[in-house]
Length: 76
Image 1 (cartoon, rainbow, N blue to C red):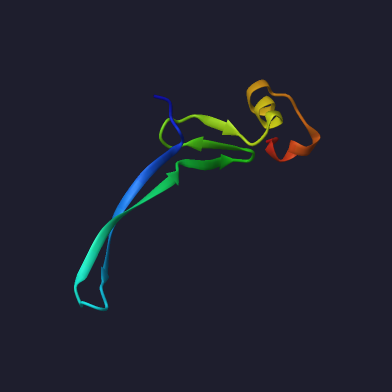
Image 2: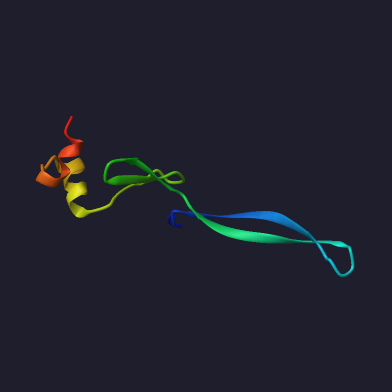
């Protein structure tokens, strides 16, 4: 199965029923994105390690070394 770059989290939520005074609870599920920004124009999945790019030109810059005027901030 391939990585979806998401994971499900759950937590127990308790609430007091104002009518009966009893505490009631339930599980709540949330889908969370697992990508983080690693530097200018690219990000990485914290689960599978895949590096992704915000544009095709950013991919060309990092993988092929092609220079673009608008991406000068990456030059070191």
